[in-house]
Length: 286
Image 1 (cartoon, one colour):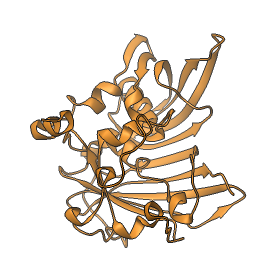
Image 2 (cartoon, one colour):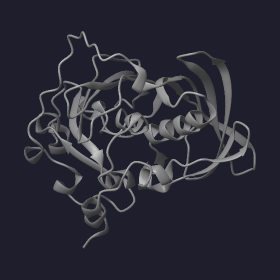
Image 3 (cartoon, one colour):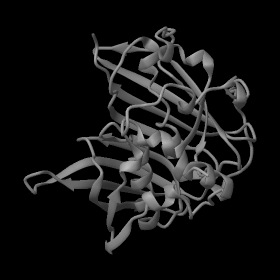
């Protein structure tokens, strides 16, 4: 049985999955953590921004007195690469229901100089203490059933090593947002998909930080190609997700001056809006 199929059959659990192992951080000193960024979460040679956000989110969850990210804003300063890294955290404020901290991830360049890759500011709380009242005009995205959607395995074989992250995700894209894959982009700047981890691990607040930045860029449906690096990303975690696959919807309304925004919504199997995000990304025109 192929490795991915075997993993899916056994269904990894929260705390015991590839995602948990690859986002693990080891305390070195108070507020300082060592880690290795896994090559398994890369696209070409770039480490995925959502994976990086989850790594920093895990470090802050250890450093702060509250367990769950409520809001986390990240500025991506330089491109991260697989290999050793260090995260340094600082507690900014601690309150009864929320605590706020900041964290930075550093790596060394070829000359041995320390380089800051990403810096975040985040507020943490306890999702289990939130009231259950909901007053919203938001509606879950209309995505066809999963068996009518398409994943990377349904297309041509990718160039080896070009998208390692795809092997770690269960991603089924809405056919209405797949025009780019057929050379016929819609021009609408929309991407929708069913989302999960390939080993069957259910979603939790940390994996929601991955989900908001794991789909193909909306720039593809605008007729653009190539890498779309994130400049800044802010994610809001609204509640703890129910077991089962997530639905992710991402839209872009404005591309100007070589930058676009992406607004993401993540819905769980109970039809609850569990996470939202907005990011600013750079695109290559022409």
